[in-house]
Length: 339
Image (cartoon, rainbow, N blue to C red):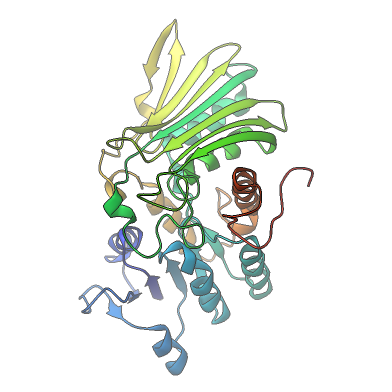
């Protein structure tokens, strides 16, 4: 089995560590910043692949966000199943093209929304389905993370054309968890703030949502905190309250007899480190277990056709912030409202 990792940054290294000891696989890496080939992989280029007509069973796209479409399209065209890091693409028309070609070639084209596999978020979904806290009155979401100027000091981070802001990059998992558990959006209002000394896009965002099922939710995210504190979803129902929180939504607590009780059975320790040890959690390991098989469907609906709606929501929010003028993320300016 031939596997290729495109991009050996934090996410790419995480994938490498998860698969490097697997039997009967050969690992290749594409990354201009990598100067030498490791014993764990062989370094290669897109030109090498084209000239030698090499084939890869699976491709992990962990390059800068603005390159995801180009790399995913390349490997789909040569017959590889593709797993794309978040955000899977930045443009709606690019998403549609990937959906079209992967469907035509009957290949996997998935995105890594690993927090869906957390014990805590899985328990939250089952509790909502069982209506254990009755009718939901309010969902409050918050992400308080830290990214300094050095983090954004490169050619692509924090720019709408190549990365997006806190919503598209860091908080996409929180937004995904909100929509995945509480349903599609009917309307919203939004405020955003910008630190132009760090990045072009927003680094603080406040949104109020009304979901199609009538649930009201609030969403707050920033990378201005002085450290990575937590992400959290606080759910208030008629019969009780549930809080999922932690560095990446990894602990589950429920009010019982007027006391908030941490349920260890449904909680995991991700630590407080930046990158793989904290923010990424254990979900990628579970994703790979499903992805590296012949099964076409993901148990958590990771197919990008299933997550096109998430991208539409993000575009609608950005369109609202910038009035479809200066900082529009894509030429395709569809809005989810009224669609």
